[in-house]
Amino acid sequence: MARIGFIGLGIMGSGMVANLVKAGHEVTVWNRSSTKYPEIQKAGAKTANEPSDILENADFFMYCLADDAAIKEVITGGHNLASKVKPGTIAIDLSTMDPETSAAERAIYEANGVEFLDAPVFGTKGEANAGGLWIVIGGKEETYKKSLPVLEPISATTHFMGKGGNGAKMKLVGNLLVASQLVSIGEGLTLAKSAGLDLRKVLEVVGIADFKTPIYSGVGAGAIAGDYEVHFPLKLMLDAENNALAINEIQCLVVHIYQCDLALGV
Ligand code: NAP
Image (tube, rainbow, N blue to C red; front, side):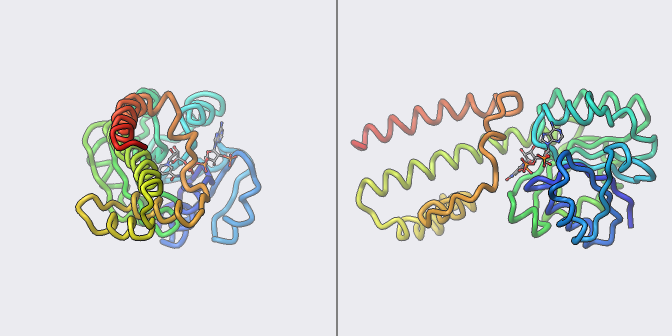
């Protein structure tokens, strides 16, 4: 059992905390807004009034924040928690972050004798709630191994990518692939509809043929059922700072898709 201080009760963080508690860890949470506290208390977590309260006696300091701006506000500037973490604690950033933001965090932690992992995740709300995320990790291998007891309860698999920053970089590569699939399933279904095809039949083929992916099946099924519940806020994907590389690549892909559409007379 570990003592964990956790920040961020968003779509992803809420599921992570519930699974850490379920695994027997003692978790104390701080979130900017306290509206989600009653639910997480019911799940068995403690809540704190001040962010620095969660660092008291923590073996691990974990957080899953919206974007680079939030990390700067809470961790490296503003509340400046990175410089308040005690030596011996392991800090783990589960947010999607720019590699430069991750490097800035690492510099503060290492100067204070705190081990740090950049550990962004793949998967969405369902995987977070089920403890089935896929985590990509950068940092020291020894730190990664020591952190497995708090990474395994929230994940299906963990992938040690090598030196600090490599988790953040892998996440951006993955976001390029995810975003291009989101664009292409949307375009594919639009093309299929305008061509008069039965969209359920289209998804049946998409789900078994050699281009099947959980994104095509899951997002595609939601789209044709008219279910647009937000699992991944698009504003996070468009965060110019952390996904600029991916977005540039996707713009090229979109031009290519539109050229195909035009060629098909859509
Ligand atoms: P979310 O639901 O929007 O939650 C964001 C969290 O960050 C909330 O706890 C929010 O607090 C907090 N926050 C935002 N700005 C803040 C600030 N300036 N100061 C303090 N706290 C702040 O986002 P999410 O979907 O859980 O995503 C969290 C991270 O996981 C992001 O980096 C995202 O890219 C990544 N991710 C998301 C998904 C997905 O499918 N959702 C998948 C993979 C990775 P409040 O509750 O007070 O707003």
